Length: 176
Image 1 (spheres, rainbow, N blue to C red):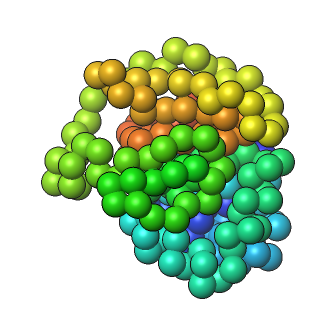
Image 2 (cartoon, helix red, strand yellow):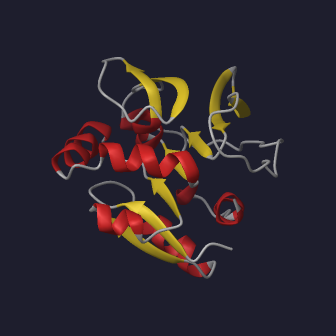
């Protein structure tokens, strides 16, 4: 199991991940600098506001270090974090880190006022570990839309798993 788990720490839904990871015996670290990034084994790009996070990533010179990190270590983009990780972003377009070969549609389900909770079946677990850019695998769908995908060691999901009571995805992420 991983010891040091980074959570991009500029903005967003950080504390719930810290609580879950700590309860599982991991040591979370808020990543804000390249030195922070070098101190972690894996990284969560949390939900929040992708344009704000992207602004801080650029301001702190983390674009290239994050891209290099994702070539060899597990990265999990959640909601806005999946937008950051995408190859391309639309609605509206914005820069991204190009960590996974997917196109992210911002505000696909509407504004935060349109948020909802549903049970979700994730049937392809455990995920096989692999590094590099293999094919994109669909892990879960909701009403015909893909909501969880992986490509090599990069995961993206459009839902806030950290706000529920189930820590199994965090447990699995710690073993990747």
